Amino acid sequence: MAGTLYLCATPIGNLNDMTARVITTLAEVDLIAAEDTRNSIKLLNHFEIKTPMTSYHEYNKVEKAEQLVAQLLAGKNIALITDAGTPAISDPGEVLVAKCQEAGVPVTSLPGCCACITALTLSGLPTRRFCFEAFLPVDKKEKKFVLEELKNETRTIILYEAPHHLKKTLKELYDTLGQRRITLCRELTKKFETVFPTTLEDALIYYEENEPKGEYVLVIEGKSREELVRNKQAKWEEMSIEEHMTFYEEQGIDRKSAMKMVATDRGVGKREIYQALL
Image 1 (spheres, rainbow, N blue to C red):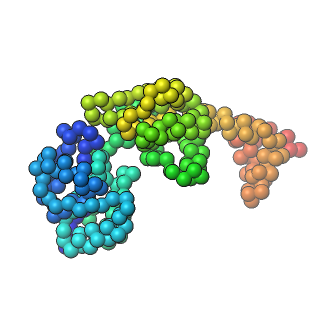
Image 2 (cartoon, one colour; image 1 turned 180 degrees about the horizontal axis):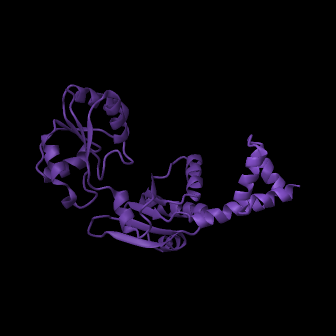
Image 3 (tube, rainbow, N blue to C red; image 1 turned 120 degrees about the vertical axis):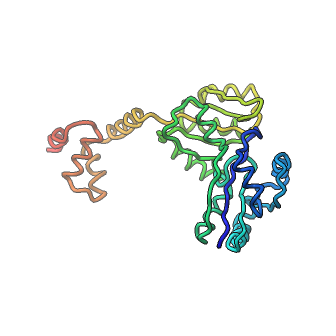
């Protein structure tokens, strides 16, 4: 029988957040795959865990995943840990999980810390609907595309950012999204945990005078649906009714349906559109 891959969440700062189940599992599996063995050995030593480790990170994730799957198929039980938080969230572990699913290897997750969820719950912003983008892309074109997508995002937005990129990212967010509420979280679960609710504009001013320190989680207010509707209606109002009709008819929509869609877009009755086209 194949072994099991255990996704083990580790503390994001405070070692007391390590669950008893994770400690037991790490001690009992045959092998621990760790993002950085030099970092993880400190964690294992703290909990007196002697299980052998192997490295599994961004630069060997495909080749090493195949090796780990082979060991799992041979019956070994393997735990996957990241430097901090939950494996496979903004993490190369997603590749290993996908390959395990393809090979029919059982995978289970041992829940625990996750920086994005911790920050969201502290943010004071709506938590029912949210989207997680992790770090923005390095490529300029791809980053611009993602920012444009986020421009009309109505859900609360969660991003990760390093201190040396924070000011630039805040400027790009402000230029694209406009004024929004934002909560900046750093040093989560640690002694100097900071939760800073503000606005994008005020955050820019603050960090011009105060150098960013530590890894950040940015929780940003989504665009209100009311504003989206206003913007959409303003777009249609720039067109004549004939141009608006043409917009839909050129997509192969029949005239009757197009009239109904135009009326909905403009917030008027279908009869009003019909009369205007006579």
